[in-house]
Length: 255
Ligand SMILES: [Zn+2]
Ligand SMILES: [Zn+2]
Image: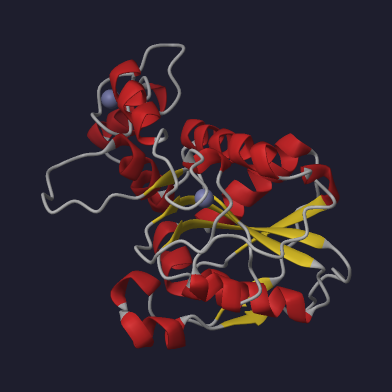
């Protein structure tokens, strides 16, 4: 290794972490976002769900597609806001882009804590085990991690609940590149070779963004196929534009 490269590497590992949004250096008590970006991020969490009228961090509404695929509850932190300007950086979206790209412990810590506060608002989490929607093999190779699995494991550790690996991806393409019907067909998952016994369990299913619900719905059906009693989705963000479906006939008896 050249001296210059070595120097760069040392600088990288010893440098102060930067804000995932504006790239400014973080203060000692900032996690993932600087104070200014964090304030902007907090504002995006105040949005109210148009069906249950709760802030998104307390809302468990899902969409029609997920309802039809055995998922009646979807926990989320905020709504993903697509931007037409590629240079516009929104702190909430930057959190997702960066967690997808690689392991950054402070970011993992930040996101898992945000999801935990939404989970605690909606579930008696002690009664659940946790798993994730698997990332495509191609992407795991490219980025070196399955970020949803990392998030699910971090949540499991902090809440002292069990993490289980249940599914693997069969997708050839990442979901982002596919559209509409193609997207629904592309979301194909399978059980890992030694799927755990989750009969009768309540399962939290973690994913980053729920767009159509195709990946989450397909995963939920497979998990229910192993005899799980309930599958509750937990996403960092939702991006679907469909009208929310209100929850009817949902069993709240264990809450
Ligand atoms: Zn910032
Ligand atoms: Zn709602």
